[in-house]
Amino acid sequence: MNATLPGPDGRPRCKWCAATPDYLAYHDREWGFPVADDRRLFEKICLEGFQSGLSWRTILAKRENFRAAFSGFDFHSVAGFGEADVARLLADAGIVRHRGKIEATINNASRAVEMVTSEGSLAAFFWRFERALPDGVAPQSVSTTASSEALSKELKKRGWRFVGPTTVYAFMQAMGLVNDHAESCVIRPEVAAARAAFTPPS
Image (tube, rainbow, N blue to C red; front, side, top):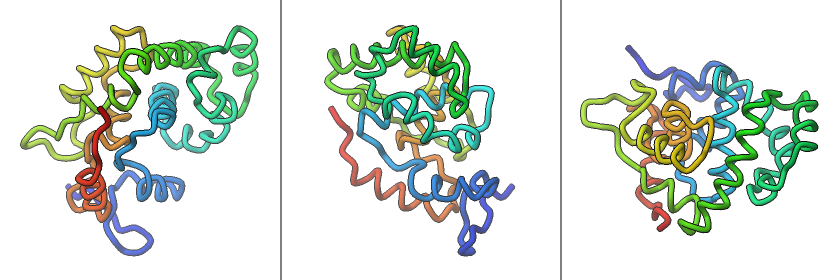
């Protein structure tokens, strides 16, 4: 089965990015490229939690609203949110108004602050779980890996919420901890080169 489709320029891209024009720029410029910025890492793992049970298209369309609602995902700021902020967020039609996910984001911000204290940075922690896909596993053929399961388990142990192994694997795909672009996708070599030039934080 062909895992790619021609993009607007005729070059092959991962089939999923043809679902909506909104996906194309995200696929070409963001998805899979390595990220070491703590705020971007925190944003993405939170947004993956909000996506649970929904489509990424829904979340991507609301991403700027989420950023405005959650102080640009500055986790030091979000960690200070209280009940008034929860009420404000539940009334915000620009985001996904799910109390459990909102409260999880605030909780996870506090856990992120703790992690920076203990690990030096979120990036240093997350990049310890970087792994190549196992031999014989084709890109985009799995929704979890042993590495995403290990990361999910460790996050839960540290008190994070909405970080199941499928959510965590989607985070790893997007943030470049694995190159899951289809083998024939035109962006795959770009991501491979970016990963090769990237020095994981320590």
